[in-house]
Image (cartoon, rainbow, N blue to C red; front, side, top):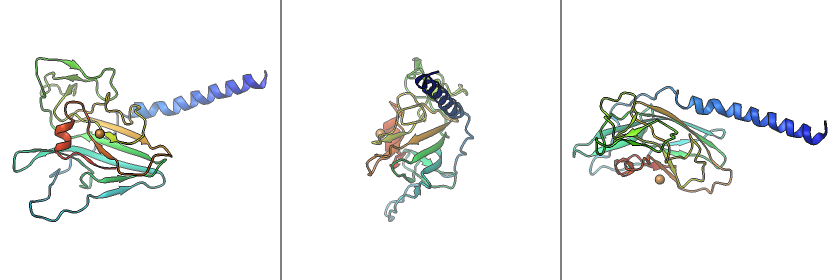
Length: 220
Ligand SMILES: [Cu+2]
């Protein structure tokens, strides 16, 4: 066997091993342990109080692991608030990563089912899907399987970053995380990512405005 054939075989084996190594990551994405809801979520500064910087989390040894409970609350003016809460009660923390780091976010959607749009219309959400296999506007209250886009359906956009749109990455077009569901993000940052201020927020088309204006947005 000549050396060219040998190296082709070696590369074939190596690529096979890489594929096998990567496979469990996507299979694992849907079976994460849920992040429990946090009591009294989405607190806001009272009128007239002094505001402080949001909490901050920093990567260590090239990795930042974050757990988020995505929640909603209604304030005293009747406005619907949204937020990312960590299990120890940090709201919308600023996430610090360096070029070349990986940001891993486990997020559980702990918002309730709420109907959105015209209940007479069933619409497949961007199938084939990366998160839930989802029909928009289909009897959300009785559908415990979560096959519905609700007012609280979410995903995470890593706004402005040069990260990959693979499933589990910065993909807002085909990722949908419905109430009660947990999703795993693994977002590697390129080594040449320019330093700067980016941000993260839910970006389900049709729902992003309510989520962002409701407060589910933070710095990255
Ligand atoms: Cu965005």
